[in-house]
Image 1: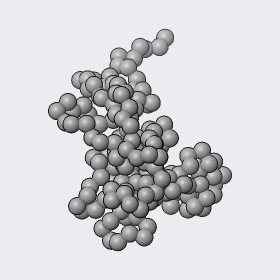
Image 2: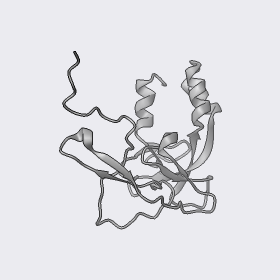
Image 3: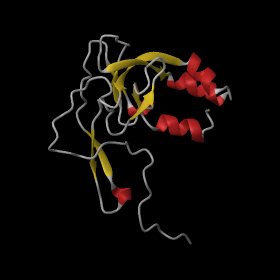
Image 4: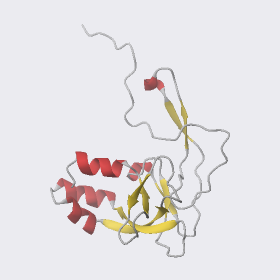
Length: 166
């Protein structure tokens, strides 16, 4: 005899999103902005919280596109080719997900995998005067002055430590 569960099990594939804020004006989808917005409907039972996808925002820029949650950007992110004239952007590296994961699965060093399996991409620049969006962090960027960096999802750093990619 099996006992029935009294509460539903969580859905591990539930998308991440910002809480619904109906009074905020929509953010212009510039470099680093969310491009697949989601509204969260909270419940007294956190396992019953739900996320509903809202209409997709077009990323600003001729060649810009949306780096989706499904390819490793929680909350997604507008990006495009590196543009030295974009005062809100900084050229960074974006991992090519399948190739980089295969490299890591072959037990190759993390630095080697990133060195071979990334592509350049425009990331939001950040500093004490120009912050990242609430769900990203400002990380020191290669070749930038102290205190200037690029906005990245914080889970990138967490994975490096937990998965042993150091």
